[in-house]
Image (cartoon, rainbow, N blue to C red; front, side):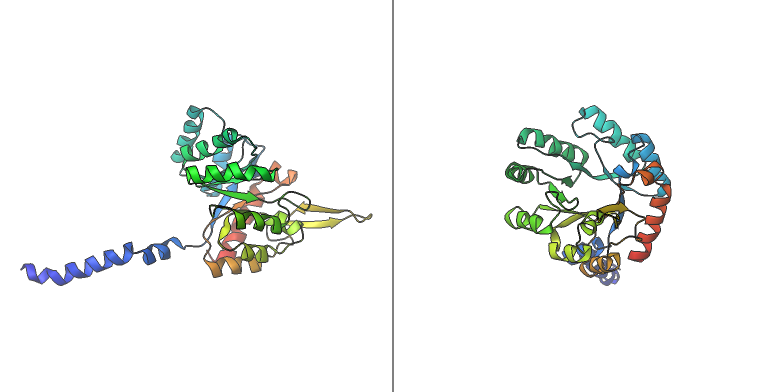
Length: 279
């Protein structure tokens, strides 16, 4: 009787091994990008309202900014808010954009907060390049990634060449939060920049902008609905598909008008994202 079941047991064992193999695990992990929300979009709301907004729109991956989740707040306050997220099936996958300094112990608070929350990537934009020595030391100590955020022309990381120099000289756990709207406003092609950064893109801000030119020739970047601006999203999503990138693309807007009531912006962004990734 026992021998009759041996072939079946062998088959089941083989299936279990195949699912647990590194190749199988990599295949199951490569599910494409996830949609998230940068809560700067909800800056006119408090924490509880932002949670309700995310639940309403079915967005589970949240990147918080300081007004909603302060990394320097007392531990009890952090855990209280984390419990609310857990109850609502939401994840604080990241937070930022965080200020840093030459004071390593001040920067340590960001890493302690991330460890308490189980956050794997901290979004930062150091104003002083000398800060990178102590930041890199903390990355190694805590084994938590940091991602460099870019703003527009004239800012510290507005030119991808500056970012690439940092990436080349630093620990591989230091990467990029690619703000698609701002990289476009700075005159770069988002798809080309994404490709050039290779595997160092840890996070993206799903945003779109157009450059408006006044009568006197002044150029002003203005937020639009995502997918209706000048960002090269068709090529960017093609690159995402080609590489199997599976990070979070967090909806974000700098527009005061959109932030007054972000419901339409977020609903349209969800539809655009779903169409772009084929979900």
